Image (tube, rainbow, N blue to C red; front, top):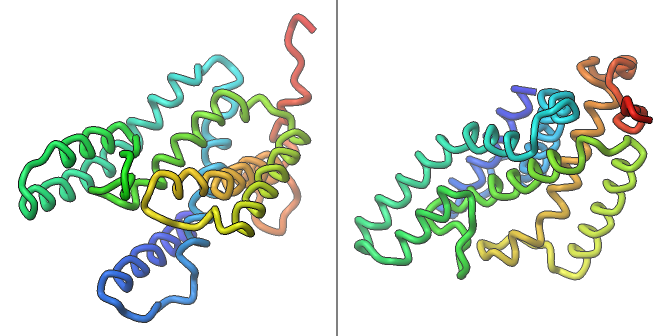
Length: 220
């Protein structure tokens, strides 16, 4: 998993460098597919680390606080660098300060660029949305319902893509249109952990991973 993360991170970083300096794409891995890999891995890791705890008393709000703490430092470092460079070039403005405050809250700004000071932060915004839904809903869904939801999100993404809606752009509308795509990937990651656990690829499915749909409460 660390190797997959590394390859995906390299693909995204090289893509951004090539875009900035107008170079031909140096790697065969599509950076958008690399982002999809990130979300699949995130769903897998969140299910592995937190699902049992979410079913046994960890509140959704407490889970979101844990995710904020985990993601905040890298976001703050990158965004602070972006803020400092922007102020040095354009001078301090209300727009820059507002964008900085919003981005540190994992929130987009309304305008041509939702994450003006740190454009890749859009993926952390979508990640927090996926985490919130995981804590509130997904952790308690049966595997059958999870598969149905994967299918529904996948169809929604396909419809958005076919109509040209789900295409990358820096604005908040474009980012929101990508949620069905990345949510599908995140849900696939959850399902993969429930189905296979920590079994090696090609190994037997993990029988120890519980289907939330089979859990009965003490009152049932």
